[in-house]
Amino acid sequence: MIEFISVSKTYQDVRALDDVSFTVGPGSVTGFVGPNGAGKSTALRILVGLARATSGSATVLGRPYRELERPACQVGTLLDAGAFHPGRTGRETLTLGAIALGLPRSRVAEVLSLVGLSAKEARRAVGSYSLGMRQRLGLAHALLGRPRALILDEPANGLDPQGIRWLRELLRDLADAGCAVLLSSHLLHEVEQVADHIVVIGGGRVLVQGTVAELNQGRSLEQTFLELTASADRSQK
Ligand SMILES: Nc1ncnc2c1ncn2[C@@H]1O[C@H](COP(=O)(O)OP(=O)(O)OP(=O)(O)O)[C@@H](O)[C@H]1O
Image (cartoon, rainbow, N blue to C red; front, side, top):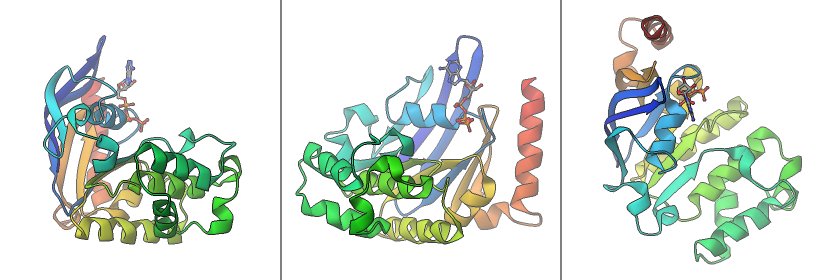
């Protein structure tokens, strides 16, 4: 379970988050969507302990991330697929991750297969990977410790339509096995295709949240999204 309770964050004079509350239960794939500057990265950074909330609390599996025992084994994170060393191969990157987590090296082949990277691709330097391959590698890294919660920033970025379908199926299988999955994106149509619940954020506030079916009632989700985020933008100015 991932939980934000009344989280606010102010940077000098910028109110990046304003009283944000939502929950991602086990078995849910929740999309966290909003335009550029809406506050998504700030919320994820607070969730994994990289930034401190001005008020409120953000917890994963019932505790602040920093207080979890061996957090990387319980919570998988993919915050920046470009963060891996370009000179290492995919397999080396994952092997280092497995060693750091105290996992057997056999786990590397398992996660490679889970994300659909071949043995040949895994022997290539990460610097030669396409963005889609980097996303797959980042997911493989996040899955090493068999986490019960997954926090993914823009995981569909760079994936082609088949890749998006593959991501949906992978995240659905993980959620069906009890994982709580939170993924952020500024692209509604990507999130809509992958998530079952959606939280729309704009101007640092949660504008609407619910299942994709609930939010789609009567009018397209895209229309609702555009209207809500435009009015949040106007009220900020
Ligand atoms: N370190 C910082 N110092 C000052 N202001 C910041 C800082 N980080 C973020 N902000 C501001 O907080 C607001 C929210 O930014 P944030 O990066 O969380 O949005 P986002 O939804 O992740 O955007 P994007 O989709 O562009 O990544 C923006 O107004 C941004 O300029």
